Length: 200
Ligand SMILES: C[S@@+](CC[C@H](N)C(=O)[O-])C[C@H]1O[C@@H](n2cnc3c(N)ncnc32)[C@H](O)[C@@H]1O
Image 1: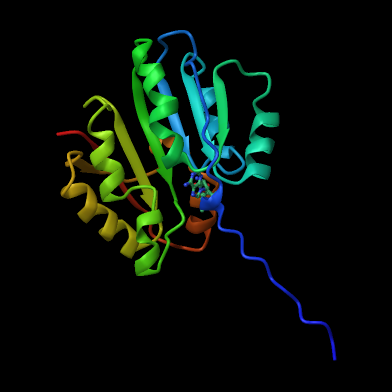
Image 2: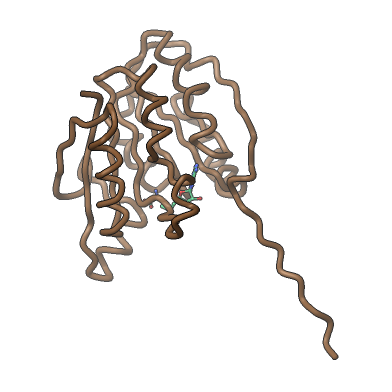
């Protein structure tokens, strides 16, 4: 009899690492990429907007380490591993206190967390938006893009019923930059669902 294989399931949300960030020390506008993966999108953004600062979140430590390597020569890019939701306020609020404007927060092709009981793990959820309303200003915009129609519709419902209900739908890649995932999905002929939203 062959030995039984034990498959370990690692839930990345169990990475409860909390980060501290003192801010960039300047008031340059900030763009935030949640789930930056290998940083293809962020790299193009950094090229297009060299005068801005960038905060990249990536829950998977090996990917975050690759991002750090990729952007090691850039003083205007910081990378945080662990769950972006857990670290969100702690990282972003010091920047606001330094007078920086957080212009956009990109949530591009987030993991859908299909099962009903896993919905609360979605980055954009009711509790998260309610807590963001306490400290994020109305000028800060979330950008949400996905190829999953059901996820888009469910997220839209959450956003509509949140303090961030100033919603606009848009077509085409944000800033003319398709993300890595977006490129794959467009090649497969998928439709991409896109919205931006801010505090009302
Ligand atoms: C489907 S990929 C999309 C990657 C990229 N945004 C794109 O559009 O090409 C989702 C990424 O989000 C990361 N991720 C998922 N949940 C996260 C969380 N709570 N905090 C930070 N990153 C997360 C995953 O590890 C993965 O790299």
